[in-house]
Length: 216
Image 1 (cartoon, one colour):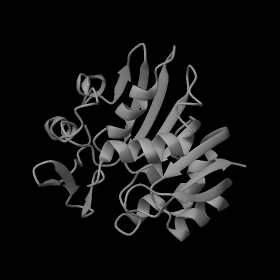
Image 2 (cartoon, rainbow, N blue to C red):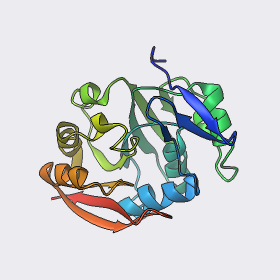
Image 3 (cartoon, rainbow, N blue to C red):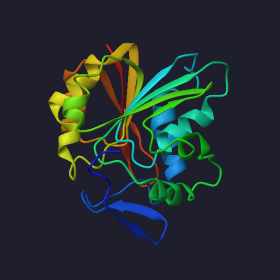
Image 4 (tube, rainbow, N blue to C red):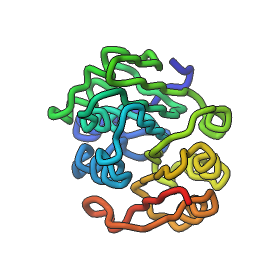
């Protein structure tokens, strides 16, 4: 576990909020539904799933996106998942946060956490701890789909810099895609410069727009 861990407070005793970035870890209006709308549908999943399909993510947080992606992976084979996280959450906090989603089985994550390597028949997951601006450039993988799930660009601009988005593009497989809840203009421009065909689409809940794209 990293020396730098997540600093939290709890909203209504249910929703973890980062005191470092003053931002909640998941939607106040339905975190699981938002994850399915933004990251699964935004990357045309589970339609594109196959054995060895590789998802990468900026911002592991509660592990909600990993568990949601795994729940949707119902075919044969193994899902690969790599996430980059600077401030990992303590196991007790993660367990408490995931209780907000009774339809989601937390065992594939909680049975292993805080181990950052998970190897089962259905899941090969790696959580890479540290500053993504350093760790992503050193990663030797390429993702079929990206979940860009950092805190708000206004609160955590480092995770949305043009340089980091360029690294995302460089670590995307041919015909790979990304999805993110943000529609901030500077993020969309950075992703376009990184080689993606970027589209603004309907967001979740009160958010009018989000962004998706595929590698040109």
